[in-house]
Length: 541
Image 1 (cartoon, one colour):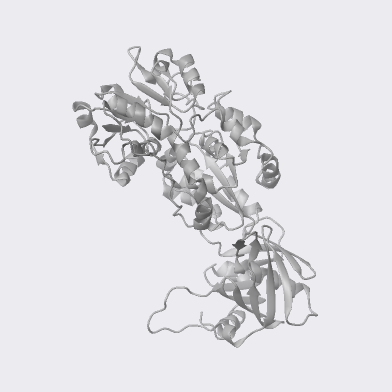
Image 2 (cartoon, helix red, strand yellow):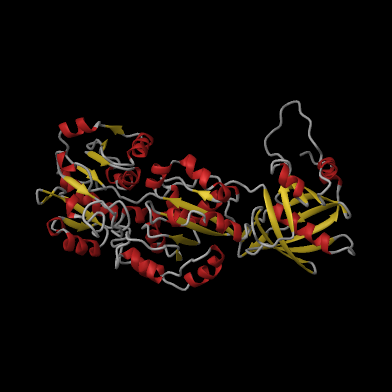
């Protein structure tokens, strides 16, 4: 059989279908790249990563195939011999593309691409919902006669991945924070085209210890722009900890891990809605979205994010909406897509399908590691022995108490401006011959090197720090994790030392030992201060 692809996104969609043939040695799968796509460079790279055997287009046209599988109606697919099965390459048919096919007709339902000489070239339209069949019948009646509802194999993989949610969040370093996922489709009406500064704006106004922000970019945008320019444009947000996902599989694991989704009119958000995730609209309008489509109905019901500063209010409003109900019109036969596709595709092959069980595989654990910010602008409110803390990127416009930075990696400007400098103990094994600072020696060295710094903190472990304050002297810190119903959350110790720094700045009369409560929003942890002990002083950094 032949898998014909035009873009990386279409290939990813088809890879979710191919487990239908797992274990069957009667079936040999080959891939070919359809010519004429603006996104064929990344499609070729994605084909190479898949490990599949590739047939050049001219050869694919010459030989006979027992089945042709594709996820885009565009290209000269009618030139390929053999029965042809067509799947959507997204959730529903929600957009029309300007200057492409028939005006105002949903991409994927356009007779301009579905018919050749008035006849459908596809022998099977494998759709996700009866609503799609009805819309196909309205726009292209001859093709609707060959349509059947099989569900959505990508949604089934998402549903199978739900038990892995905590593992995905652990891989991302989310912890007790709320994970806010932005999704941007491609084209002039996309979030990145209309509101390119939104990722940096959100990371600039949301507390780093309460929120984590991630961005899903459509594979076509990756292909058009390239990771180099994307990373350059998003540099302020990436420096502040933004997670930029890879275009295959990782986007889906982020939806599973997410606490809420901020979206344009791209259909990725329909998958999030089907998982029950709150959805917030950042769509600024345009001509692409089809009125009355599943995505249009979802956006109509969602609270709108006009400015980054309104995210927390929009998040509260979004949690009152049943998004699963909104997504129900896009997905039928949930959990059954591979089994139904197996029946249809093997019938087209003229083979008896295997009798083995067929389950949708879960998505892989995210492999992207977000950058850890090297400097924070810190807002601290001290009330007795409790410190409420919010940390923002150093470039924030928020009112703050002090700047905290990692020494020396944050860079000279931020090191010179910081009231608090920290370093983390190394975890890698040092060379056989080496010289290192002790925690006591390093903290003394830093205060000597940085006269504007008031506090130096050596992070020895997630629960243990040594802090040197210019007036209070040397202190040992012990951090208790936050415990809630059998789960343990660890707060970033660099947040804890900022809280202690703020408390020492606000208090002059105190005695050791003392116990403080550091409240970062999602978790409040107890911090115990005592005179510096010998083990901490002599700890090798």
